Length: 105
Length: 474
Figure 1 (cartoon, rainbow over the protein chains, first blue to last red):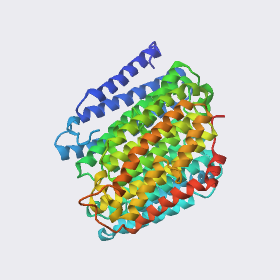
Figure 2: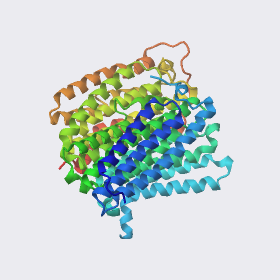
Figure 3: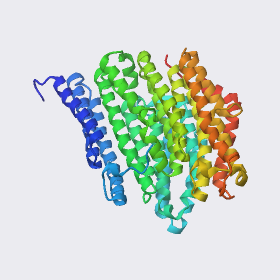
Figure 4: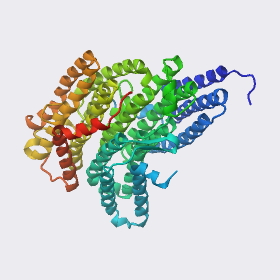
């Protein structure tokens, strides 16, 4: 139990994580780092869901269940994404997004 | 729960069954007989498509997570028809040497995305919707990178998975605020607690942004053209018709069911998106030379028209959107079928390669002509009625300026659709595409598409049936 920490503090942490993830997605050039940024976004969502559940609706567990499913699906997503990144690496010998530019406009 | 209530999720269970049968068939088939799986999958899926036309009782399952009503069943039928046509079109491509070991993979991946879309359409809470959405997205990325030895296909796959993961992250962040302010993830509980409170508006905007990625609305469309160009052509057809249709249906259902109290917030939002999508989609389509990219931007522009119906917000809006989508399935798949047939036979995909196609392959060019007329909305074919009803719906709500912009955009779109027709019928070519024989499966699929293009526009019974089962806000 987290005594004495107001909910807004936790929400600020999750908002920071979310926007750090968006920022990382846009400015990073390495695909694995981009994938990590996405994980950051999804974890911000998880924090939000669990915090709302814990502080506002402690008698139900909908938020925590949602967070569990998000974790599971994020793993599936990451595994497919990494498989595709390996495929790109075999084709181009690089996982820099700047190199993946055969198609434009 | 009674055992016969599982009947409510009939289509999903049948699809799971088909996927399982194909999985087993893959194990017990000798390598030299793998082509038999194509026939097996097409026949089984055809039966499933027919089976879904039988009526199903209304009801909910799993404590309200899964909702079945005649409208969702009809939407699933529309998607089934689209997937069946795509299966018929992909026969030649799957028989190629390089895809020999991956035949059942293709069918299983497509069917699992279709199961995801079905759950998404029938969802009664945000968790079910999210799982359906992801099930409908992740395998598509694998499908887009299906020809993994081609650089473009690999690039399409990675672009799709990264952008769609970002979009679902954004969507989830919005949903977390909806949950935080309402205390529930069930649509029936949320709907009473939605107001124009800032946090909920924030959640709604993020939800719209996340869904707009999936339907590829401007300014969230940047992945579309690249993925459509890079993916194998049958996957592109699947993405542009079935995947987009399912996302549009879900978007509409959730806006109607959950956010019905705040129409004054999401209608201006969709207004802006519709104007931007139609205009940008059309303007970019003009400068394309690759057929797949051209059809990608054309499908972006068509998505803008769909928003007109969604904005109407009532039964009329839902009717027109589903009707438009049904026509769009046949029309767009006809266009993709011709592009696919030519690409398989000759490997050519550019509009300039189509010069004087009419002289060498008159039947194919006539089908392409019909598809282009239908996409542009020229009267005798069904596309005209689809667009006309969408405009009527928006006009009934009083969005006259939006309808004017849409009509102007439809006029602009005539230019680039007719550019293809001009290339086929008028332009001379030194080395035209040679005459070739189209395989029977492709012929069958094109025949279905042409029949659909003609019949749906004139059979008013279809429109009336959709109208009788649709629901709107209140």
